[in-house]
Amino acid sequence: MYSTQASYVQSQSVYADVRDFTIQEAGILYGANSPEVLAVKAAWCAVGVTTGGECVNSTLSVNEAKSIPIFSIYPNPVSNELNIISSSKLEVNKLQYKINNMAGQLIQEGNVSNNKVNVSVLPKGTYVFSIDGKGTYKFIKN
Image (cartoon, rainbow, N blue to C red; front, side):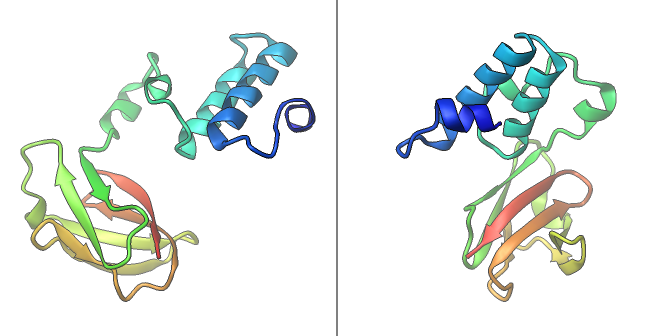
């Protein structure tokens, strides 16, 4: 929103400041609980600029609830190996993974080994990592 940039954002502003300013400005323009404010909040959540709990939607549909990931990956950005941890009792090492580029092309696939996936051969860029239909994650390869 141009008015946010012109009125609030300064050279020392960080992403969290811009998030707060755009949510505030959408509230001023459209009303505090308007669909536009919800869309702005959802957009910030989608790119990971959040304070945490605000991205949990109390009107989660059944399909959305089923897609809540049960795995986490780290580090992100990554240089050589992605570590995979499970928040459930599923055995990570028995699962298959796929890595796609941002155009959706399959770049790499295989089985998780020792809770790790070697990504050292990938060129620098942003990728989508999916594991056996149990979760999808965006990561950056350095």
